[in-house]
Length: 591
Image (cartoon, rainbow, N blue to C red):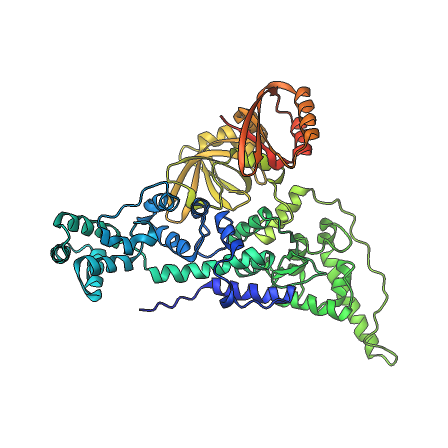
């Protein structure tokens, strides 16, 4: 039996290899990579498997951190176990691997079959082997047994049970144990996974992880190119770039690329992913810049050199809002206001140049020196407006995120990440921290306003519903571009996740209302005595009633120290502490 599957992952592998050759001059033959690469298995063990085929989900990442896979066999077993039914055996599998749980077999004859999976039935092939070895069935008969188990046909199952037990007894196995073995394989056969599939999937997963471990920017760029039509996936990938400290440059008309590219270890955003900007427009900008032989100096300069039928008003609007003109003169607000006049000026410039070329003494290759108009005198957009407009054309935040200045609050208060719906449980009460990207209100049956809004965090977005009673109390926090903490119940319907919001706070109020202790983390070989002295002085200057807890990290261990300091959570204190140890080492404890 052979299954042929078309996988986008194979395109991503190919695109990564092409990028590596282009950026590093290295030829990678994916079929020749070592299957025992230390860095690749360390990547799995850290759970850094975003975009790694079949190992991407948040629960899977947590299991990988516990499993510390060391071979394709480990990956294949985890791939097979991470499914409804077998999933209940994952913790036992991990504990048995590390000797924390005893491995037992119902009969010694099972050991040779189940040894590699620590006594747990994981694969369909193991069911067939057991029937063959224990009950003396032929492999064809054993497969009929497996299929009968999967169909749950009571009459067929009774017939197979009698046949299995009879065969086992003839092989000198006690009848009671034979029945127990049959019940064991009956339990797992209905959802046991095919080992050949699990191994094939795991080899492809290993290949993607190998590329991520050794060629990180190229791997992430290839994924972004293949996913740019899906803003939710792109958001997850950009969050991975942020976590792994891979810089993503905004699109740039002076470094035009239709697709995501890599330069000096940094990813250049693919311009064709911008709303209303297609591949043809980007190729026209590339052509014009190559012919010009220099960078564009302004939006007027660009319009003088491109075909404005291709790079038209809608294209220019998308480029400006996405930040693609940030490398030329003027602010985004100025360049946006200049679009129509720039197109008009560019068309006249090209028309005059054409007339001159057709004249008796004209030179078609000569660049006319006509002064460009001044950019409109308009005030620059504030950061919130700039990011909102960026999101309008990209479907996500790129140059920054409204939550960036609230990372400590996000890490401390959010109990869910909005881009990981597989971690949500129906009916669960959760806290989410994010920015409201769109909202609408509706009049309910009682004539009062209720609200529907989308909440975005670093990982993705979620639809939220707020009934009229809650909206009447919290409406001052619920508006577009507001950064909020919401508390509510999860409603799961298939793949769709919705939050029924019961409370909402500004992040300033959340910090004040939820924080029971301030926790700071120090690294023993990084933070010196001087840092500790500075922290003590800071705490002494902000006396209050919030206890301070210090966590010291050393060689993979963490030690908690409860101090005598009690502080007030003023913004000035948090800024001083952040300046000493970094925002990433500040946590607000809620209990």
